[in-house]
Length: 325
Image (cartoon, rainbow, N blue to C red; front, side, top):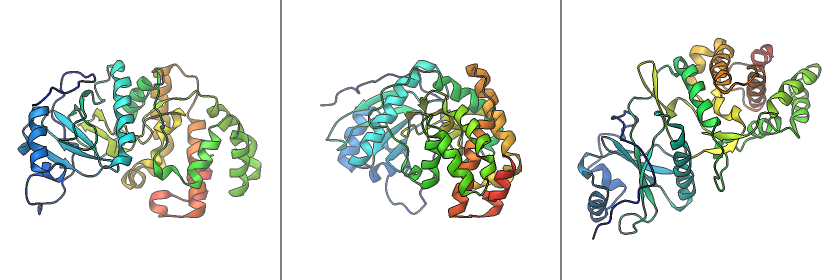
């Protein structure tokens, strides 16, 4: 009755990780049954050779549900609309397998079995470590890791696009700023909106320099919640469903990171960008400093603050960001 999994590639299982979030103590029954009805769960257990009683449920993903075993992580699209994001994540894992990066999950198997689940599902290696309390200490390691996958031949990722929260005016401005055809106009637009017309030529030169960087495979949504660490060592970068071929700066967007980083490190964010970018550029042999990177993101941030001043203790102020430029 049961068939073996369709193995799509992979490596030896990694050690147990800690990338899960509890969903409360008042759940009655097995966590697996929040994803699969009991008959489906029993067939899943046989096909995937897993004990369903020991699986841990993670429901924090936008597009997928996750069941964690000791050495594997099972990925289930939440709905039909989540399947394309799921398939892109698997495509990214196949491409990343050529890097030999131990900090990226490896695809172990994928299944299509409507008697288990109405959509395809997959298993990847579970990486050890937990979400770091102070991810900034990992910035150089992260920069070197990013360089590894940016060196890959960009894979075909049909329909790939930025996550939904990027569909905002300030993110759209940044996309124009990183496009060679529109970077000069984006600099002039920012200078006008921010009341600094005299800075337009300098910003235009820096953004034009950035716009010349070729597109690469990007994770596309890196923040501290996507990182795993064991002490001061980076052990995992997870959740690759937003992978796409795009400008390399998108993997250095510290604005995606939690407010704790900005509360602790806001006065030193320039140095943080510089450390991460220097490690990255050195690994890739790029002769590009961090000023274009910082200019692009500080202008994006200042433009966001025009619409929503936010909390100055976290976000800073427009004047503060422009003072660094």
